[in-house]
Image (cartoon, rainbow, N blue to C red):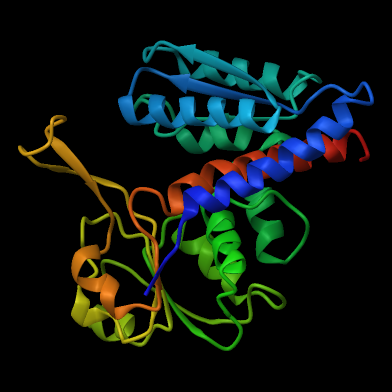
Length: 293
């Protein structure tokens, strides 16, 4: 069994991005600029956004963090999005999800300029991805493909089972892995909470992508010997033995599944760091496009 080290791969990619940015800034070009909008003080969202800010610094990017109170009105948030769309100094920006219940997330996503949508959530980018056209790929699925590529894990002709159908992970990764060309050409089955006999489908997977959001849902009996398991889940489970009162676990019962796999991602330290670095790569793409680099 080989442990897929997402943190290590992310550091390699950030080093490569820093080298490219240094080349441009040494010629007098400004660095890439990523902005993040955070509504409220959700601890998980704050930690995630701070990680993005840290990664920007490591890549030589400029970052701007805009924090707003949780009672911000939808109209005021839409106004802020419009201002960021027009700001020529900002190459890309994200509005950190989830948003407060009184704000329509879809309305906010639709308001973001697709050319600055470095999260890859806008329907225009999603549609281009589905047709194999140049676009910003959703960060987590993009990170998964980079991990598979780094570890030379073949996808062509393989049976991939994606567990979970969200627009953020499950549906887009199913599209990416089934597209024609390098990193794709897989036969993909997408299963979810309403799938009958779900265990039988998962057991057929040469590659299993777990993104159902249920702690340790994937058990040893669901995985065939030698399978590749990509665990996207990150769940807080109560644990009185921890100082925090909880522990982080994925959607895979790692302790019992790992020995059965050829490759597996841990939680944390697997897919998570790749999500952030993929956002950096999308921002660099936006920067390069704007400067015709």
